[in-house]
Every structure is written in structure tokens, then in C-alpha cells.
Image (cartoon, rainbow, N blue to C red; front, side, top):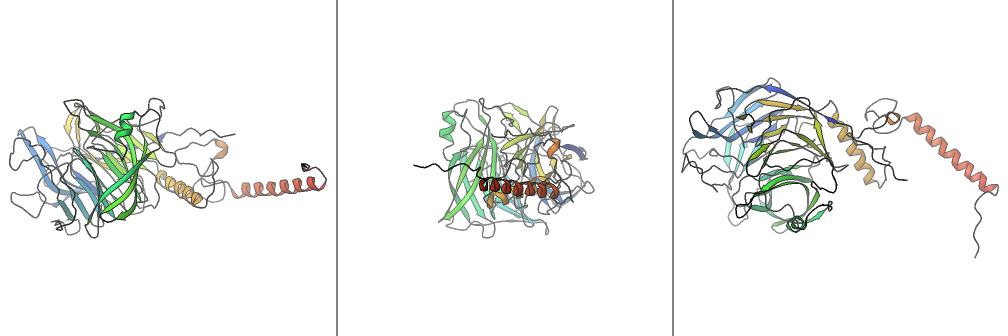
Length: 482
């Protein structure tokens, strides 16, 4: 008889303010100014912020940003790493927003973006003023450099509002305004590969035929999406985004979740496969984040060697007026479900913000994240405060342990009982309480106590002996002749 899945326990988190909102909006010599659609990475326990944009209502002028700052959560202090760009400077990326950033070793990689054509028209926004530049910021040397293109080798076209993340030593770039292409760059050689992918779906019920046709080879054309690698570094997740509509119709805003895995390199192409993990379905009402764009998607436990999912925060539904979110969700790949975090005090609704882990690359896996910037409508404001999102102590480590146990069992071809490798978000009845893998004698989260295991083993031996003795006494089922 199949065992029904046990109900999930609430996912609990907490927001705390590390650094309050500060005036003036453009900042001071010791504090960063407000901004949105900026870049952010986590490096050496600090959050590094660069570029972005806001509109200076007091001066009635656009305020394009190009300075670089580092925030230290240990003492809630800011330090300027690089001054802003000045007119004619060719050693610093000019002011821009809606670009992508990621950190690799001790460098930040900035690709693409949009500057609204402000250098040609300071007061009037020019659509399509995008970049295809790759800038690299050496965090230790505090210096920018422009990566030159190699003649005769492929290079992605200009773009903005795209997504980028690090997978298997390559920077993957997907989509952007009016684009559906997918590229991957080797971070040692800076050579680009065009990605060619097939797709499959794990979701079927409730998906209309138009979506199925459009998603035949992957997520398709979209912008304002968010992508993040799995913690094992072997694949990436993509959630949401928007697609411009033709003829003045409302744009399409997505709530679908995709997963991409690399296959092989073939000439100048990287082959791979997209898997549609799901989207909101009227016929299967399960917890699922609403449609959105301009949101944050963050890897959980980067560098842990296992995929324990991604964290989703905020964003907005813009059709075309924007309604902002301040919700927090976690995707669990082992049970293929979203869980919304229960948070007693939420930050202000916002979109175009950034969210980064506090411990990426350091193996501590504290399960805490730093929120900065963005734009809100209720109240209408730009942000330069810093909030910290924290999950219960040991929560992330429990997810890592459970995922590693599951991976080990699957690699050995074992079929686990439902209770032998529980997901941290699954509530267990009192009779099956577990503790951590490194706990002492007693019942642990990784399995049963040694005493119970011994008793079960003894029972199995006695049962085997009893059945054997019955056969010897003539109680076994007779053979059928014929």
C-alpha cells in the first residue's frame, strides 16, 4: 500500500535591518546612494554593489550611477571601492543599469546593460541603447578593465534585462529584451559558445497548447527573468520574466520554473537540455509563486557539491502598471515543490533589487542573505538600506546533509523508504523524530538509532529462521505439478 507524503512544516525566516535608509538619496562619502537595477555579488563575506540608476526628483534629472561600494555586515559599514565614471573615461564602465553581474575568483564580471542614451540625450530616454561589453572588476586591486573581443570568434549581441550565472566554469547568459538566445563563456579563455538546447516537460496538466508550442526548445523570448545555478554547479534554474506583446496588447508575465543542464561541446556550440519543472496550473493547485519579473533568484549553498534549490524574493507584476512583491520562496529539487517562508516582519514591497548570500564560497552555509536597493510604489521610494534574511540555525546544513544522503543512495541504486532520507521541510510524526548527522547516540535525522537497527536486524534473522524451520516441518507451500 503506497504511503502518503507527510505534510510540510512551515518554512520560517526572519528579516532584520542592518543599515537604515539614509538621506540624501545620492549618498555621502561614507555611504552609498539609492539605486535600482544595479549589480551585486558576495565576496569574502561582503556585499559588493556597482552602477544602477534612480531619478532625482529634487533636481528633476536622471541619476545614472557608476560607483562601486562594499558593505561589511560584521560592522554594518560601507567602503567605496571605486569612484564614479567621469566624462571621457575609458577605464571605467560608463553609467548603466539592467546588466548582469557575477563573481569569479576575485573578480566581478559585468555584461551588457542599458544607459538610456543619456550621453547623447541627458534628459530624454533613448530605447535600445544597449551594450555588449564585458567589463571585469578586480576586487583586490580595485580596478576595472574591458575584455577585448577576439576577431573572428562569436560574441553575443547587445542586450539588457537578461540573466547570467556561473555553471561548470562558464558564464551562462540568457535572454533580454526581445531575445531568446543562450550563450556560455569560458571564464579562463573568454571564448563564447552558442547554446543549442532541446527541452522536455515534467508538467503537463493545465498547460495551454500555445505555451507548449512556444516552449518547444526552452523558455523562449523573455526579459526581466532571473537565473541561478544549482549548488552543485552543474545546472541552472530560470524563473519568470516578461515578454513584450505586439500590437499594444498586455505583456506576458511568466510564473514558470525551468532547469538547464549542459551536455557536450560540439564545435562552436554547447549542447544541453531545458526541463520545464512546472508553472501554476488551475487543475493542480499547489503552492507556487505568482507571475513576476525584476525579481531575485539566489543559489542555496553554492559550492556545497549538491543541489538543494534556489531562493526567490520580490519582483513585480507589470502589465504594464506594476504591483510589487515582498514574498520569499524556496524551491526544493528533492521533492520538486515551492515553499513560501513565513516571516513575521516583511521588508517593503519592491522590484529591481538585489539579494546575495553572506557566505558564498566560504563553506559556512549559514543560510543568510543581504537585500539592497530597488524601487517601491507603496510607499513610492528608492532604497539604500540593507536588510538581512535569516533562516533557522542549521536549516541549510540539514538540507545539504539530506541531499547528499539522497544522492549517495541513488548512486548505489537503493530505493529509500519515505522516512530514511527526509527533506528538511517535511514534518515527521513524534514517533519518528530525527536529529542531525553529527549527533551522538540516539535517534538521528539521518536514520534510526543503533539500538533500533540492531533490534530490527535480530527480528529479521529470527523471522528467517522461523520460515526455514516451517519448511523443514512440511509447512511450506507444495509445488504445483503439471
